Amino acid sequence: MTVVVDNCSKWYGHVLGVSDVSWQLRGGIVGLLGPNGAGKSTLIKMMAGLLRPSRGSLTVFGKSPFHDVAVRRRIGYAPEHEKTWDELTALELVTVMARLAGVAPHDARGAAERALAQMGMTDAMHRRVRGFSKGMRQRTKLATAIAHDPDFLLLDEPLTGVDPIARVDIVERIRKLAAAGKTVVVSSHVLYEIESLTSEIVVIYRGQVLAEGNVYEIRKLIDRHPHRIRVECDRPRDIAAELATADHVARIVFERGGVLIETRDPDRCYDALAQVVIDRGIVVSALSSPDNNLGAVFEYLTGESRGRA
Image (cartoon, rainbow, N blue to C red; front, side, top):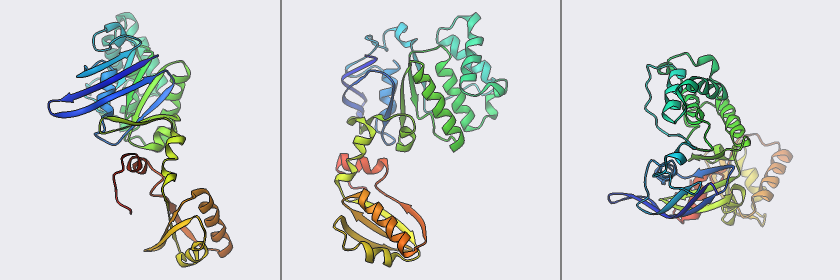
């Protein structure tokens, strides 16, 4: 077992960061999902050994990461927000971080070069960090996390600010790390980012674990409630007329330039909608679902209303 969290809480004065979390992590890639302020970073910092639980226990490889230096050296941590020495080159920065993580002085530069190569930064390793784009800074930060060849990686929002092409590349590189036998925890507040990496997730909200397991099973929680489909098109009344009598349609609302359909069976509704569009020759400019996102999952898990747009 890589990580065991047992009734773990962390508070800062009167502010609660994590509340009575119990969780076990065996291996592979796990997505830690939650909105900003949910407690993701607090939990990650405790697993990294940077924070000590206020109550309960947390072990990594059977030891406390807060007290055991040997365990901390098996952990690679890429924080959400970093403060770097921007006057250094990427190679100089990663070399320094490798030394701090316990790599021998005569091995540190080679380890840094290999880590930067793994993150696709070979051509830029001699450039100063201050001139890097957000994507290049993220890659460099990930290189600092893997330079000492850790067994357990904690990546806090590693895809924030990264353009779509770079995101695909970084996701593939993280997958390769897991394929090489490393356990990886990746935090995000964006569901599709995690879906591109893994199907195993932990949903955290207000410092508590609300659900864990396969992402597709958790997303089925949405379908226990009427599912909304928004169609922007040239003839919304034609769509409404065709679908109004369908037994799976609960409600139809006209909006500016389109129609919002609430359905109890999303799969049947999408099939019926496609057939109507084809048969009637309707021009659809946009198709979306306000419920096909992480916010909807949280709404149904917490029972809180986020508004019905």
